[in-house]
Amino acid sequence: MPSLLSRTIEATQALLFPWVFLALSASCLPGTILRLIREGRFATLFYPRALRDAWFTDFWGRIAGPGIRRDAAVRVIPLLQGRVDGGRVVERQVSRGIGGTVIEVGVGSGMWVDVYREVADISSEGESEVRRRNVGKGGDDGNASKGVITRVYGVEPNEGHHAALQKNIAKAGLEDVYRIVPVGIEDLDNPEKWDGKVEKGSVDCIVSILCLCSIPDPEKNIRELYSYLKKGGRWYAYEHVRVEYSWYMKAYQRYLNLFWPHFIGGCTLCRQTEKTIREAGSWEDINIGQPPDEFWYKTVPHRLGIFTK
Image (cartoon, rainbow, N blue to C red; front, top):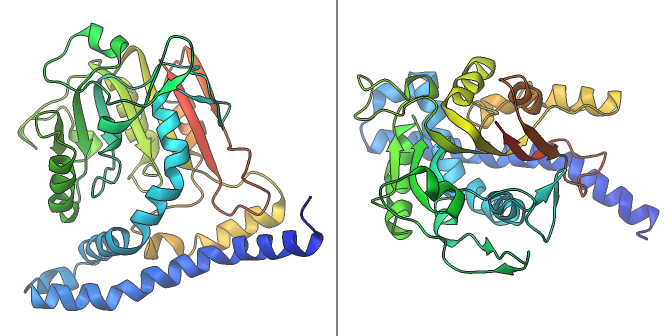
């Protein structure tokens, strides 16, 4: 068992890390301003939302994204395989993995695109065998149950991410499968806003990875996303949520949240995302929880799991 000293050091580092994260974001702002000036995008400098998006694009792409991708993969990949139970990663498959038509929300520069090609399948005996997931064109209801991904709609209204996202799609060899949706959730079924349309009740899976913290009007948009799922469709969620334990951690997170959205692209720490998804509609099954290795000093706690409609 770790000593009291080592536990104290670990807790102190965890409590201070969010401020380090904010400082890293702040360090990117001068470079973003210089880039915008070089590119002649002077209007962006005087439009706070556009400047924030450009700043966050630089911070996420160059500093935060790669590290988060590396650290979160040990949870996200099993999640998409259906190997999570009560927030805990398990060896056996307890739910169906992704397949069919997929909506991925808030894809950013596409740091999870390769997962659709590389994620492991689970054999009928419950043993994992790493092989390429079947990904193909077209689609029918049978493909979802076979674990064949027929279409991925990547929702990303921030155009600053699109160039990097397109490169990651090409790198994964998914040009015929993965489609960038350049509008918000509210316009997924509106062909006047983009050159496509997603029909409500037509989607097999929704994937949200650390993104619902920053969508506008979360209650409305999460209900909207729910309406796109078929009966039996699945929502794979890995999101950070509001602290619900100990008054001092609640107070600490809320104080931190006074600064966080301004430095981290509109991300909000204190959303009750699990509760909002639960209340979006009727669910046949909910299997979600907080990962067991997140201790009391976790300022940004998570929920990991699957909702089945």
